[in-house]
Image 1 (cartoon, rainbow, N blue to C red):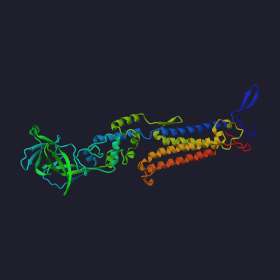
Image 2: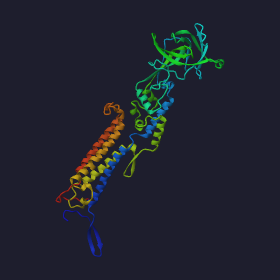
Image 3: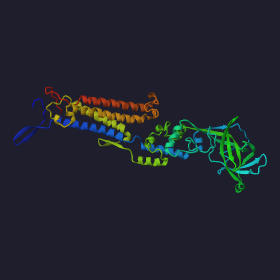
Image 4: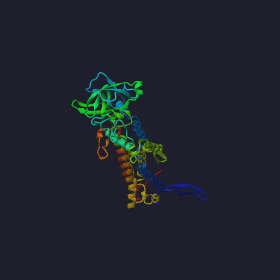
Length: 464
């Protein structure tokens, strides 16, 4: 047939030697292109489905974060906060020659004997009382109350949230320092106070308990921290109310520890933590517990541990499995590789197909010259890989830069200027943008060199 290149093979038989036609080169070539095109569609669709169906967080990271919070719950106390927070010892205006150091002089049972000496005889006033000191004594300026924990106070140094929802409130509040004072030394010489007239009606002296004191039936009075303001400034000390009497014992504070704790202090202790709002500092944990934040911390740990034990998802292409954690890297490599391969072979085929070549009979949408066929090939060859690259890019960039965006009610506002981003993060973002641009270019070139009809009069080139 004129203008058609046909390969032949030699056939020797009893009837003589003759030339027999073999399969035309264009048919095999187009079938190979069809396979590559289907691979491109499969990779693009597969990446999109994996990314939309995959977890938006890492369960293993979420598990580490919840374990850190439970550890903080275990150690949280005024003593621990004083040790790892910013603590400064300050002295009051009350001077004494006999200070009692509450952290050194109190015995393990935290009991002391108070000997009462009223100014005038009081028949209902005991001469001796055993004072019971609490293990933690603190107060916050502005409370003007005893140091009893208020359950509604998210910033208590004496108690820790039981649920992740409450810990979220605590963490977000700690962007401002939590400040509290704890008495360090008190005067062993105190006052017997009238709760009616609010004046001193006698004196009190603290001393260590003896075995005979423990055996006596002395009244026991719990000690609390009290605070008030007077003309000389802010004052506080330790007080114990006598049972059934309108009398109390008061011992002024001579020095105290002023402690402040914020996110910076906790980050120094928990090395894998970072400052910021809860949804940014604990991103994976926040994503993993969106619907179950009201559960107790230990319950959440069990749920997250079970999920982490299932392992990470994987994306499979060309018989290889890529971990979900590396889906962006390997997804981009696989997608650009298939696009490049398809473009190279489409360019090689360009201007070589004749209207009468058998390749046009291969059932592939790329050989359909109708308007609908061109639309389908444009969507699957150009738009679909581009969409997959956009999804890949968004997935990775959102994880890389979530620390640089503003709070949730302003999701499109940058909290950190691009020029101040970490160089490695900025480099990865630019690499992803470049990959998207390359994908667009390869798609456009593949569309340009798609199979088109060439007139029979054009010069013929054979594939060897």
